[in-house]
Image (cartoon, rainbow, N blue to C red):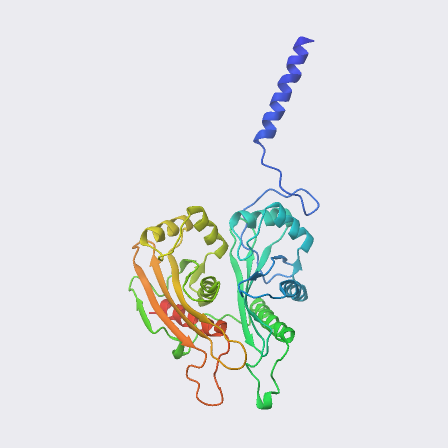
Length: 381
């Protein structure tokens, strides 16, 4: 009996040792145990039935906005365009279990857990830059589809910045007076772009930017090779303007334009943010060479892009002009040399002389043009 007791005790020790070495149990959401984590290639977002988790809207507008209504519209339009969406309650339990509060990006650990536990193929991340329901209304959104898994990658990125009086027409017949109508038009603009990209009808690559949006001052090092494919980490810009979140907003515009240019692979901003938090890097005075070297190494990037926002203004009502002022610095990994620097400043009424023809009514639309000009000038010799 004594020997039998020792045998059972040894079995218990063995079993508890095995249990201790096993991985921690994950939150079971999808109705069955999650499959083993596998490193997979990014899914094809053109495929029908792609499962998408729609994160709560990141509000960068600094003003109250119908965030839940916008999210539900995104879900509806995704489903209408052939995507499957992860149930809101499932996603909410996932976010609560993993204590996820930041919805402006996704890091590798969360992206992998999302894939394992909810069976999502991708996540839709949307930032609301501007929301003004006063007459005439204004809205600006930046949205991106990012693959789930251990290597989250940006599959698609689009934006829409509109004002109710953008195309008022003769006697104001095309004026949009209701914020809800303008919101619907902005979302339709986003999904029209997504639909065209999925069908292969629209691939921008390089384009002819408008000369008035060129940087006022710029420097480009011969170290930059025009035809080379660069991996870029875009850091949040230092915000010296009175507009809340302007640094994050301008950085998102650069993420989109760099990806659109064709010869840049842009690291998902959520990964960049997580690494900056982990390294405890604070850039109050800007990006130093030492910090740039650290960031480039940890992210395995070729270039790091950062900058400052000196002014970022929208206006209310019918009178006024938005204005944007920012500078950009790009540091290359091998040489630790500044390979690009520029200073840009524009107003919405630049070059407008007759009947407001060519006038731009949102800082979002100006920034889109300005960042496009910077990226394409930087990329082309």
